[in-house]
Length: 247
Image (cartoon, rainbow, N blue to C red; front, side, top):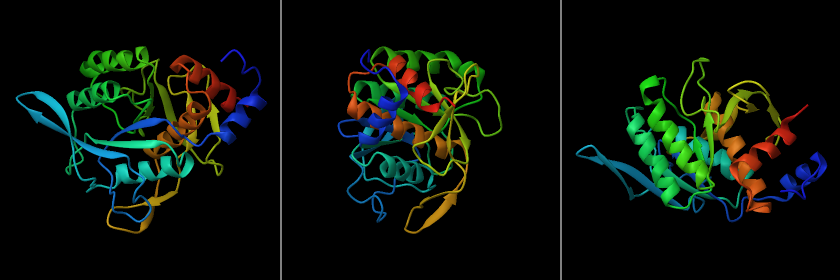
């Protein structure tokens, strides 16, 4: 990264990036692979399976009964169209998941060679902080960038409030490649997350608002940067995001 010395070059790099060669693990509600906007654009779909307190991921047909993951996948694909999106369903049809499932999904992403983890989810359970923090540390030490959505209510949530995570708040930003970096706060990035038009399961589109939909904007920007500079480490990605988002 030493050759990247000014913001103009970083912005130019972002413009050249397409996400090619970058694998994104999307921890979410699954993805409707049959939606016309996403056909052929999801590298693989998996679901978390629990047995006797142990979790594993198995490959499956991409479905989404909620729509959350489908919208996030489409946002990533729209900004970084050549990134490989790997959908890992960690939230079921009842819109509920578990901290243990989130941790298992993150471990799977590391073991499967993902470059970026998109977590448009989180937990308010402080008792889960240690296990989630350990999973994040494992990811960072293996060169995986973790991007997580802040809690929409402004509460302290994990993994977003962990210092090694690129955490994202939503803001109205018409340019999908624009972010704002906020120094000195746990939630450091603002990205477009208000009235985002995206596909919903079964066909059609609707508008989404929230940090969940700002998060994939940031993940896609990270993927574009990594496609130009594939050897960047997570701390270097954070530095580039600061340059892109400073006023």
